[in-house]
Length: 225
Length: 225
DNA sequence: TGATTTTCTCTGGTATACAAAAAACCAGAT
DNA sequence: ATCTGGTTTTTTGTATACCAGAGAAAATCA
Image (cartoon, rainbow over all chains, first blue to last red; front, side, top):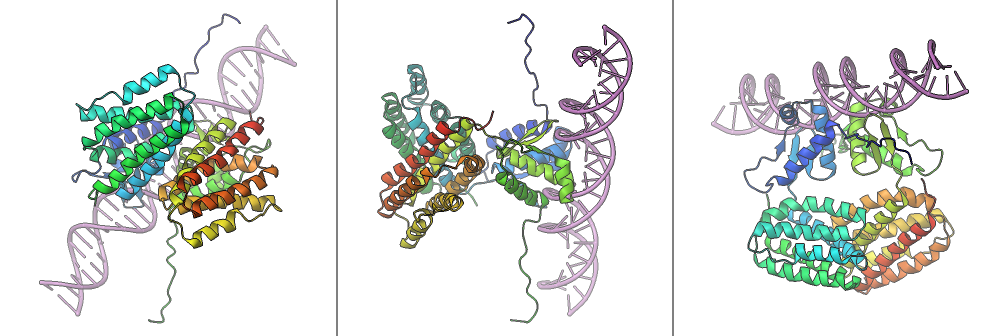
């Protein structure tokens, strides 16, 4: 091995469409889509102007967002942030349950003690004093499970789906009675993973998530329109 | 009713970017990606020229395909059809297994006799005389299960994932010994669904699909580099 | 006045022009 | 022959200009 300098590749994707995509995506996810007085329209020209660039890269970012189901481009009418129906959100939760369940199954038997401890710290600790903190921790818990599966695709696709659910979830997750149930569920899940019981872990995660689905269908009658 | 001519709705995706997207997608999926002498490069201008249109809609179609992981757009270098690694394909199969398994679970208890018969016709009938026919039927069988779940998102996402696997699958699925195993698996699956055993159906489908994963990891050592 | 037609504007769709970066090329020097 | 350095070519990224459909507003007519 010689002593010559070893430089990093450097190339930081400088393309605008990429940057715009990320900016818009974040903005959309943070938007309170279901509030009555939110303007769901996105104007290509206005966005381009605001960012001080041309429409072209903006359009490409929008195409991508449309493909991710976050917006809808109605030809010659306008671009709108997508407001998912209850049915769609519920169905997405089902898909999410399928993926998380598999992740939990795979996590069994390949987690280190340290990883289990992280999971406990995130998901079992009672943060119910603060709804937002709890909510955030809840997300992290499920993210962590995806990670522990050591299956990148599972993680990636799981997070994609979650992004589609997130706006609705954030809007309607205001029921504090669900918190305690959730925490005890999490404890059971951690336990199953730790003691290497894939079947049980998978079932617990699935049922835990499907409980959210049932809850959504039951209580979100008036999500939109 | 009057005698004036009655024209068809026609309404067939008027936008070019949509049409191009579909054309390119199909072309890419039919491509033998893993063959040594396949040119993986896609030239924007050439495509635009061939189709007799400008680059703009072509680019938008490409952005979409990139978002679906079917191609890779290297900034200022070119766009290339993506050749998935073994690891990626195997992982995608895992995700697919998760989704199909959930679909089978949901299908239980909500299938009509007619639907079961369709499933039998597609997946259990021995078509092993012809590898291609079998392969096609195999796909249809799994598609049908997604459909029977009556969960649109599950179906949609399942098919998206399948599209990413398909090129590799078609390239490497040449082992006729797998056929018989597959057909008996299918029969078991149909049986479980018909007799309304969700747990069993889900497990069978999962294991059936994960068997493909194992097979891939074991035999496709030399898929690419 | 109310219904219908026309026009006008707004917005996305497409084409084209130009800029910039990468790759290929090509000479001249070693 | 090979290396080096600059130049040309190629290809993508971005900007700009124009087009066409949809919908609203205005004008028109019964």
